[in-house]
Amino acid sequence: MQHTKSSAENSGTAAAEYNGFTAEERAAMKEHAHGQKQAAARRGSKAEKEAAAERDVLAKIAEMPEADRLLAEQIHAIVRAAAPDLTPRLWYGMPAYARDGKVVCHFQSAQKFKSRYATLGFSDQAALDDGTMWPVAYALKELTAADEERISALVRKAVG
Image (cartoon, rainbow, N blue to C red; front, top):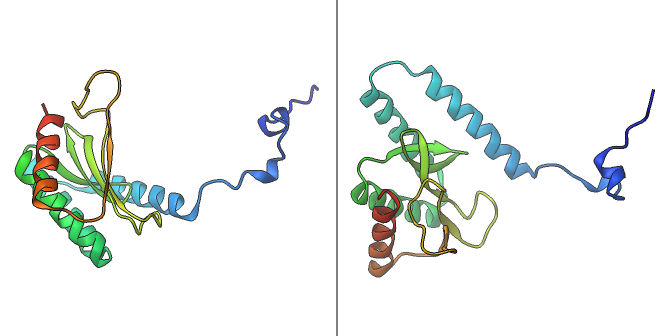
């Protein structure tokens, strides 16, 4: 029987160097799996499922530390006003907004991954294409009226 080297052996690095996912990444994956199970278990009309998903998002926002919570509440209000056809849902334990089940944009709290700022991100489902390069994530520390208008315009553009 022939011995096959692992990719760590082939690359010349010791297998001990790979520590796997961080605790925060594992927690996010667990939250995602839990959310998927909850969504699959829900019975009822589409409107009932969407209402339950929005309650889940609002509950997750309410759990956040104050600075993140205030930003998430603002983002939620902006997205719901700019694109009422997007459905709020949890995505890896964070508020997200989807069309036809596919996430268009999402909020990531600073505390979740021990970052110095929260993030508003857009997926490849967002129609933000502009030439050969464009931003898909924005750092958030606080939101001014001008920032709110810019986010609203981005969300409107993202949904086409």
